Image 1 (cartoon, one colour):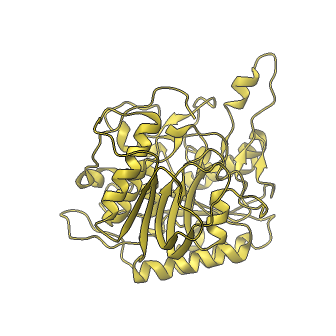
Image 2 (cartoon, helix red, strand yellow):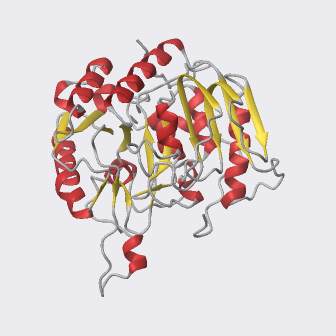
Length: 385
């Protein structure tokens, strides 16, 4: 998983500065239910019912449901994506923004997962065609951008590592995207209910982190070394909230991780290891190249699907090869999560380097599993009910 030299991110996370990355920039509060557009697939049995159930539980206004008619297959063509998903979503967001705010999209069970690469032509090489594939979620984050390169990725202006860089798209053009999905409708109902229960109670359990090597002294890191060090730093940050276990070298073995509330590790490619008893409201992701290629094929051993089947409520993974630098930085993601001021969707967005690429967040973007440790001037978290 290498492609180009990746920007080195500072070794520490300045969580005191996270307020400047809030999507709701004029009120300094975390993502609000009134800022969400929910998207269901009218062709998938149960998709709209699930969407309405979620909206009722989260008190999302009724006019924030958009039903589209698109294939129920997990993979669709670029043409179908544009016609059946992109254009209706873009129009809905622009219309709703005339009278209110829309900062976040939630895709529901039945929505396609990935956009296939176009066929190669004399004008489009096979390599160039392959570089146009993407997750639906990552692509739809740029629904408000009229034109941008489809080959490769687009820098995410919300990513903390790019705050001193000029990016192709601005923050006001980017939508946060989450997905409530899984192998069947029952799993999605369970995810919604468990998320709300854990949010009310507060996420409890143990944080498990799996690194390959000891934490290096060198701070100028990139590629694998950067991400491995970020796993170490994530574990150190999570210690402020719960007991943690850090294992270096070998992977966690079967049954080794009891009461797992948070998890990050690597690298068991497309082969979930049944190490975990997941706590109510558990969140985690495995850094490997194929872990969200399907959310429906229950014979698959990819990590995202198996984590959701076994009790987690949120996970992250790629639909195609993302290269290691396509993953969210673990220290930024978990550090901001346990800090308690940002929602799951916001933590993901500031930790994610690239859009129009391969990554998917499965989980309720409103989920805030931790209350802030202490009040901070000018920052107030979304109230929990």
